[in-house]
Length: 99
Image 1 (cartoon, rainbow, N blue to C red):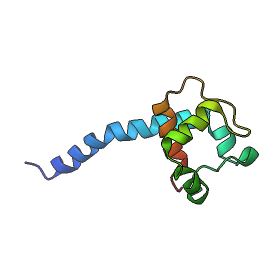
Image 2 (image 1 turned 90 degrees about the horizontal axis):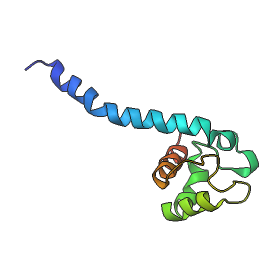
Image 3 (image 1 turned 135 degrees about the horizontal axis):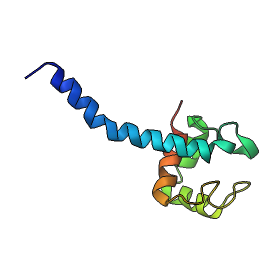
């Protein structure tokens, strides 16, 4: 067996994860980034782990309810009208990670 096999296998196994990350990043750029990149209307900035930590402690169900119903200046569903709860959860996780 080639020494390259384990490395090639690792790359192949990680491709779906990278594709998922790219899809979330693309959806973020079209929707959430409008407010969360610069903190418009006090939206927690993407990558600001401290700002997101207090929100994450509420739990994903509460965060999803806030997105679905709107919260403060954020309209219901934010700017992603075709997002599912799974999409919103992935977007929240993406924004909450320290950058």
